[in-house]
Image 1 (cartoon, rainbow, N blue to C red):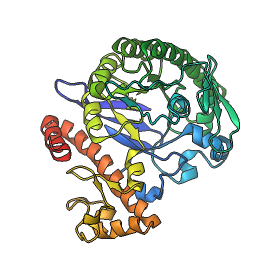
Image 2: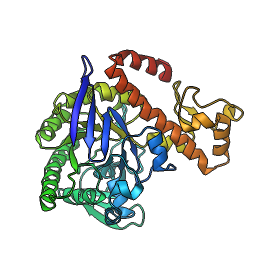
Image 3: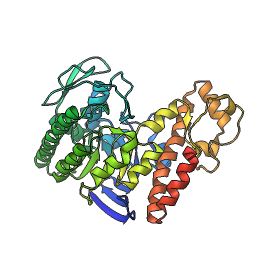
Length: 399
């Protein structure tokens, strides 16, 4: 893997670059489309390619459970298995430490708001479907209740079988409301797991020198705390990773500061991926503070519920006002849905509970987000990032 910075954003940490992988080039900043189980829900790989996506991310935990990482390996690796011809990425399974653990059933996500007092589970407690100890995490399958144990070494082996171009070290993703003491404990454990992940990755590479080498990214943790984020960036940044993930939880109000704390320390010459965050304002904040890659399930998840992105903000296509609206979702949008169908038709599909509804909505939302990031990249190259940001956010959020 090679990473080249083409242009830097004046006065900020942002940059436009190119990330070369064995299966193609990713022009950064870029949005990676989430294909959790080696499929982007309701879309074919050809549709995903047509809307402009450059890379797809699969979920290590879910692919391990179904169909099994050995099956994916037998199918030629995730790209060949799902017929995706571009670059591929897998996460480490670390997010499931949170989603099946401290965050299970709480309604929490990666962000906390000021005044949020919800508490997640601490280490050692049986946190719903995940239990953490020093060696790794015991997961209880959400499918059949069977128990599975992930160590850093196990995560690397699974990702090696899945065969993505870019993989991540195993980490502990914490609750955004966890206190400083536990965030520090989890961060230090993540650092130990990062070293174990890197050592095992190098060990597997030495055993199979003829195989194509995967790029391994280490993950920075530390929650919403400045001292922890900076410490984690120093520790992880000093390890010989190919790139870096910025994981865990944040305060919504301080995302820009948190990313700046980290990216001012991480090696400039290596790529950075902000894990699991992808709302429009977060993309602008991330890019101007040095993030090169993003992934998030939100575009397709909200699409399946009838929520669509527009330059004037989100709309719920099932509302009565769209039942006889024969205009496009967005007049100047060049996605397949907007070029061929009206709001009235898509509204009808959702009301009738037709499967095609999710397909059209997902095409539009992914096209919107993927090309929003591409346009932000172009604004860096054209040296008009600030003007582009101001114009978009004024239209989208109304302020």
